[in-house]
Length: 302
Image (cartoon, rainbow, N blue to C red):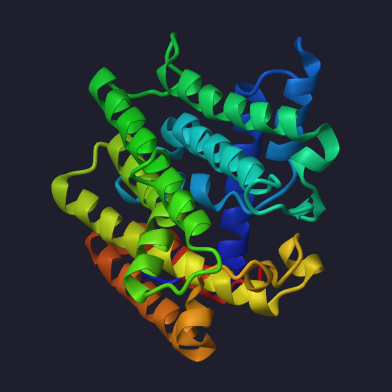
């Protein structure tokens, strides 16, 4: 598998980010639509910045499986809507109580807690309107569309992202073992990232071997991403992270560095990225972008 240079990866990520942002602009309600306050809050949160890593993974997976990125754009946009909804709710005082997200005041700080809750609800609902609406935005056969909807719903629900968030809340101020920490990370963060890879494969009509490879890659990258997040929470800054560093430590949250230490946490992240890249061998040169994204996950500073 060929390797992308850092410059080539930066160009790829920027091109795809702009593509995703343009799609989100089309698929979201217009800010002035009545009631305008909720649509303004939605757009404020969605367009607050961010790497768009999850939707880019959808597009890169589709391309690796010989599909078209354009065909996967609606699914990619839907994933970003769900991710943003989860961030809005995570930031609320009842959960993480964060004042900043992506370098800007969080949704509830600008629009109030009630509208922030409803903005998250609206984004979650809009994602499934986009995936299921008529005429279909997603250029896929009805069976494939149902598979995509089910995949994303399972990843976002109580057996996925929501379940991981529940465990995160319940484990605050408690001693946590490695098995519980792995469950927390693979569900709160990893389940949606894994779904991104599988959804891209579904849209591209990937075969069994390709789907298995995308699933292995997604599992490893999802966990590596959260381990690096844990490390950055200790070592980052407001300017780099877009939020105050050290919040996990202040809230006595379960993290890999708190359980295993920084060096072992770094080693686990590097090992997971190596396993993720190995899974891509089935794609040959078409897996180059996913391989470069794997390296980016472990070397990023925000």
